[in-house]
Amino acid sequence: MDLKNTAKKFFLTDEYNDQAYPGPRLLRSGGLNILVRTPKSFNEVREYADALIGGSAIMISFSAVDVPLRNRIFDYLNGISYIVNASVSKVNEDLLIYAPEQVDVNKQIPKKQKGIRSWLK
Image (cartoon, rainbow, N blue to C red; front, side, top):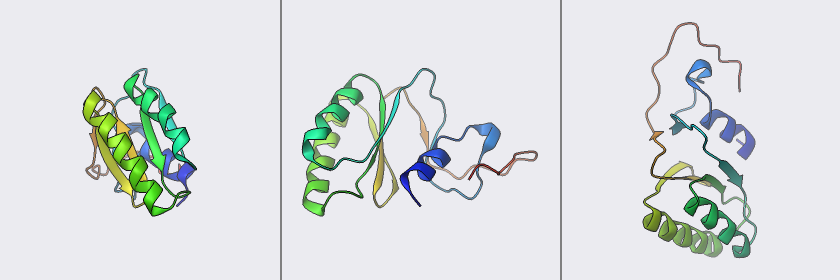
């Protein structure tokens, strides 16, 4: 599954829930800025940290970096998350979401609802 499709399934509203997707979901965003990024070097990560400090949610794909750089980015963003009381949720092996304190992330599989279209895939 590529980053675009994963992000689309993650941010589906209750009106168009995809029942086959078991990962975390954004429950309410209000006026939330959501950054979806794939870092290629550590130099890009400061921008992500500044956005998280500013109240934006960040979805990071680690698919373009090697394991040592992945660990360095992970440690840095987790430190920032601790400082601003943000949550970190694993979507899959290469994808994490860092959400500010005011954002709820639901990690449960939603109940099947009648009349819900699942054509958004």
